[in-house]
Length: 545
View 1 (cartoon, one colour):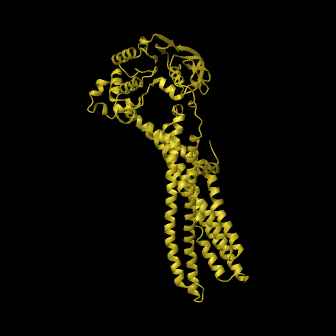
View 2: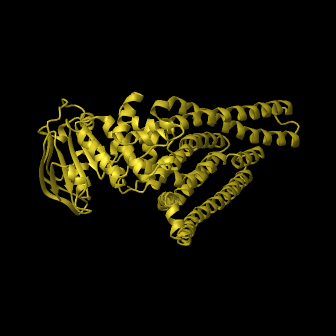
View 3: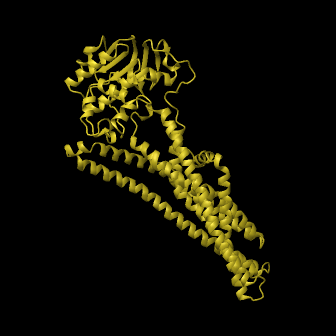
């Protein structure tokens, strides 16, 4: 969703409410700090007037003392402002990360199916990190620039009202009009650029994971060519931002020069009319030159703001995304007494997978589901797990529609082994033990034995404490699959859903696993999905899809 910049800013600022008092302190410190910096320039102007005219009202010693005080205040106040802003930024980034992961928990697993993982990684890392710029270097500078400019305009108006009017116009043009022009020019570019970074991350992640295949089939040159092409496209988008940054600097420099000269011309005109004296020309001119810092900071924000708002837009898209399936928490728990599908209609987008599917899954039976790829075998298990809701018809457990069963209750009733078991970069024991909170080592070992994994684990130098590596790269496909089966045994649910559980196993190990399934599933209901006819031999009934 493409939101207007002001909408994105409003939603991001809304997150500050718990830390509003610190933000107000940062703004007050920033205003005082900028006024201290401007006072140094103004006091310098008065010092020059004192040197030119010894009878000028302020003593040089007084001016010198005030200069030292303002310089020290500027440093202390600037430090305080930045400390407050960064405290807010890091607190809010931690809060946003917590929110994002909470949302991902609600959106998963449907959110992760068919999505670019690299794009999601970019959002979780660089996009959220960029919000630090917004909270630490955007919100308070806007407030500081507005308030400081108003105070300086009021001060200049004490010399003549036209000075105040001209100052207000100059601040609005440099701090408001210029950033709006630049932001409009780069708003869409910002979102495209952030999405391109996500796409690049996906490509790199895909290349790293498939490096073995790339080397084996000598596809390296093709991947390098694609990488160069994507890099060139990304560099071109980045150069567009550089051009906008350069344009911003040029516009700011020209604006400062033009409005400074206009102030000098106005002072000369007022001097000729006798409306102001020399001080009334010199001090406003010195003041205006030294007062553009806060509004230039606002103008320069437009470049970072394009990236930041694009990142904020992507983060807000995720935070506001509606889950495909809503969790249920307010129902009574049910006990497993069988399951069924009745006239189920379901598809992904316009592609229908299951059309009027019906079947009973009797208690304490092993049901085999056999069919060619794409016929809906895996989809059926996902519907039973309620990763998706059916378009029409009903999926029931114990004669309760699963839409009316508490999500936690449903997860405890079902054990699900997927085609590709995800292995975490931790020990084998911890990988198996995640299926049951607080599982004892004996329980883990017993589950591994049932999955024909125990002897292999004992052959490893560190046994059950062996670290599997990232994505389980220290294990074979069959070993990873058996860890998934061991998890299912440890989970000990009454309803087992097994999606190609032996596809990566040889005939001998498949036979051992299938025998364990028969022996350990006497009091369970099992749905066994496979394209292998040999796997179907243990099923008491086979359903052909």
